[in-house]
Amino acid sequence: MIIPEKLKKGDTVAIVSLSSGMGGEKEFLHRYEVGKRRLEEIFGLNVITMPNALKGCDYLYNHPEARANDLMNAFKNKKIKGIFTMIGGDDSIRIIPFIKQNIIKDNPKIFIGYSDTTVTHLLLYKNGITSYYGPALLSEIAENGSMHDYTKKHLENTLFETANIIIESSEEWTNDRIDWTDSSKDNEFRKMKLEEHGFEVLQGSGIFEGKLLGGCLEVLNMVIGTDIWPDTKEWENKILFIETSEMKPSPDDVSYFLRHLAALGILKKINGIIVGKPKGETYYDEYKEMFLKVINNESNLKQLPILYNVNFGHSAPMCTLPYGLNAIVDLEKKIIIIENGDNSASV
Image 1 (cartoon, helix red, strand yellow):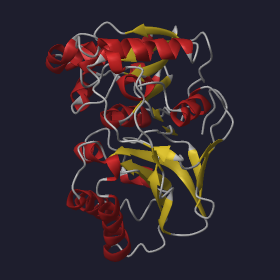
Image 2: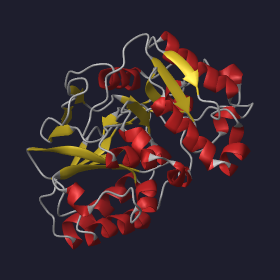
Image 3: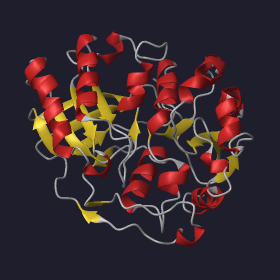
């Protein structure tokens, strides 16, 4: 794997819309402006927006090739050092046929997003490039009031620095909703809740480690068997990180997905699992039961470590997880240490 060169103040980064085109709809343009301004003012970046990223939902739905062209052109442009996704969605898999993978492989650079962006992460992983499962522009970077300190800290540590990253549970979280279409509420903070659970150990003990591979459960389920799905051998000694979206799949759907991984032989190959905080803590206990039912009972993998309720993916705030980098998980201390690596290093 190639670790792209870290960002620094003054670097140029691009915004792309690879799935939903909502960032270009007039009711959300104010939020796009907030996110863009924060990248410039908080992180010191020069931000450009790719030509098709603001063309709206209908255009981008009907033109997946335009989304793909923006991504390829952002990778080809030597002045662009990083690529931020506007938002997720549900059909970025449609851009894959239009991607010339050699363009991405020959131009490694920072790429970040989550949810449906899992598709693009797996494409980069296939081409040997580390990418980052983390904040999107419209949601986390343009967070109402201000970016969460936890989200901001981990974004900076992961994309701008080379020191090891230490991830602990956030002390608070939120599922409060504020209408994104109401620009008068851009400075209104969401109500926060105290974290009652912290990182939970479902099974296992001590320390385990491995390189990170995973994403959003519903999207992973969509791409199993496609060209971008990692070969079974790729899962050897990896840590699977997995989280569920705002669609809140049923506990049964989670169990079906885990059974699919078991049938593919993946659960026997990995070194452990990191599970994201369920959206709004809906099905919090039910998901735990399904992980134990499939992994402990059905698969008889009673020693496979599982760390639950980690702040990534569809949770607020969130940390940023790098694909293909080594993570050390201490189940006693309930912390994750990621070996962040030097600029342009191989891992």
